[in-house]
Image 1 (cartoon, rainbow, N blue to C red):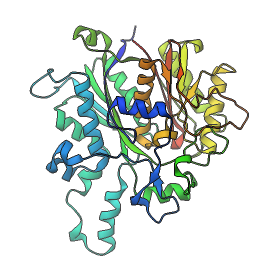
Image 2: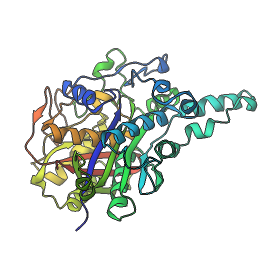
Image 3: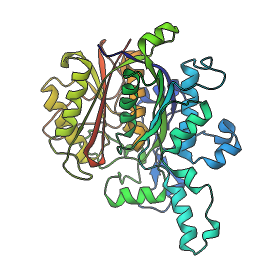
Image 4: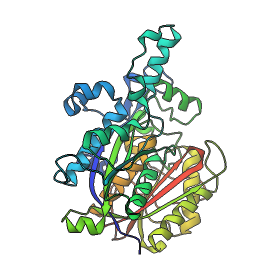
Length: 409
């Protein structure tokens, strides 16, 4: 019998706030946090969902901030808060130790550093390239800096499966615990891709919403008038450990990660399979891994980017698995935007919060559906949910799909 894996700590830094309580309040209000973004001024899409009130120097100190780009800063703060939430401070005065691993998902890291440094090369000024350019921006440095900061000397690596990166990190962390390789894993994702380069690339792909005049109405997952996602940023880190170990140290168990499933579309570099075949396989794999029946699922935290293709494919995948009995569906990206490689980890944290509160938050800006697959979209206000499991779905470019299944204790 595989070991139960408990979630014992949460750390969040998102446009919705810097604590689980702030994030939960914003989700339940169900209003988009999209706003004009000075970083994107003058571009065809000049708005995003931004992390505000974040003072990295106050949080981390100037020497660390100098060598850490924004996505690394988010990861460090989220990890510190997750460790504090899990009350791991007494594990070892010399750091968390050799049995504690770190696995973080990163999608595209912070391209702003690359753009700045490449600009120096383009101007034939190589002497102006910072010696910190690489350690500031290499995707693996988020996990690396977290390990350095907290003295976590166990396995340390980064998952890169596009917008499923954070969810994949949690699945890999679960396996490290079940195999006995680690006793505790800090797992999640971090991303800050609010650069002019990233926004321009997604705009050219027609992936971003173009509602410049009404950015607060731009993010609208599963709505018939959706026209793309809103760029976001942030980080989430979850502390995972075997439930037996958590009980032995009398830790508070926030939820149990019971299932993880993955499946590839093997279809197209950026477009999802129109019938959601890879996504459906990932959902089915998570259900099988958790030994859960369809009726056990109380709600779905959908990937729900708000693009015409993604939401149609995800609706098809859910209908393919659940038939006419798809559980209530929520999607956080209407509120906080799309944090790319961090999105799956943030969604996982939100699924845990929904299970703990017994409520499913509403989807922002949802007015009505289109297409052949009608879902039970939670809209307007939070909806009480019966006891059961929550599915968190994450789907990325390259047809990389990851699904997590959580239950309350």
